[in-house]
Length: 90
Image 1 (cartoon, rainbow, N blue to C red):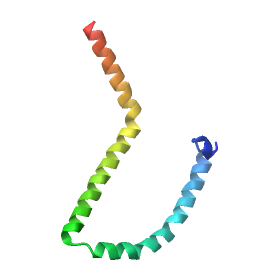
Image 2: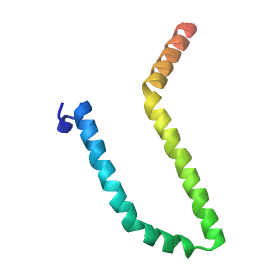
Image 3: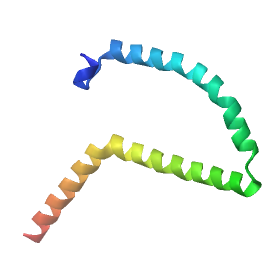
């Protein structure tokens, strides 16, 4: 399957993964000095706030990921529950 179809096959996925893995090392080498300078310039309070914000964002993204992966299960359960309630009210 072609990537443009939205459903890449295993070969396309592997190729994209390889491209991504070759992209990251040079990027990390380039941004590391800037990140070090930025982080070392933060006060203790700013560093704590940044760490807290990052942890909160990570939890949010993790929750969204879990919901996304299980959305069809959640939808099915909800639909079945609504149907059960309708039968019970009848």
